[in-house]
Image (cartoon, rainbow, N blue to C red; front, side, top):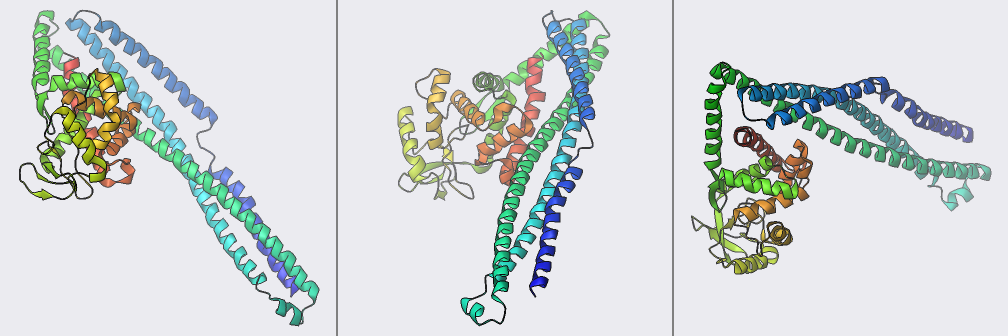
Length: 455
């Protein structure tokens, strides 16, 4: 019996050792990247060469822009922009190749270490069962058993050996879990970066198509004549003026000319690093929400209940009493507003309303940013219903949310946090909001900001 026990135990631990030792071979075989060091060096060299060419084209554009507006100058600028964009698209393709390889490697690492965790759990379960068997002997069983005492001592040694193996297995699982989590985090970052590059590539393809169309139109209209180009310039300037004059809706604050909104966004960008088109898209999104959901008035400061602004419909949770009512009353007093006829957001399906003005800050959050806003604008009191102040507030919050990084993923996540407090991956509702903001930002940049800047 004792010999049989040790044969079984030895066999079990031989399999356990093979599982541990063999893992290293599997991991090294599966995580070896098909793109070796030489391949990666080649990609990096190609990328560096393309980026050098991009910088040359960029310098040419900037040099030409200092010259007076002529047909030749503007065609040269269009040619340089077209060439620069083609090179930029090429650089994105090279970068995507490298990232795709990194993503494959991280996926393999996760697969290998996840399998290791499963094997360790199975081994651990078997070891725990064996521990339970060895631990089940009572003192009476030892005293009354026909087995020699030496056999019980052999089982005690086996028990200690199994306990040590359990400790080793737990440690192995801990290491494998740590490596797996690190690989998952790195994979998420690589995927975000790939998404950002693909998004930029799509924007550049659209920009390229627009510039090629513009070049063809200019050459067709002017037939290469400088005199005829003056009419083209006048048309561009008229279009820019029309865009600046168009009204830009703001939630609970009426409308202002787009040119004024854009000027505010540029000031915010200087202070916070937030891209103007992205900031304007946030306000456009919030304005749309206001039209769909309507606004409310606070009526009872003790309960936070109120009524619909236009309908008079009672709402129970217009404002959270312990968090927002007091700062709201303090703020409206400073601004000379009647707190019971000042519009705030109505509650949604879950949670409270109470968000104020175009930027839709709840009162307790506004208090946190109040000093930043007043210092940035050189004013004594910040007003959430005043467009300029609301723009600056949103800029600071979006900066804190990570939008300053400027990538698609960073801006989209910042928009989701602005809406829900969480990243896009945590809520499908927030993810929809973030995607809609990014779509609006692309439209604003292409159809409103670019025509103004290029006029």
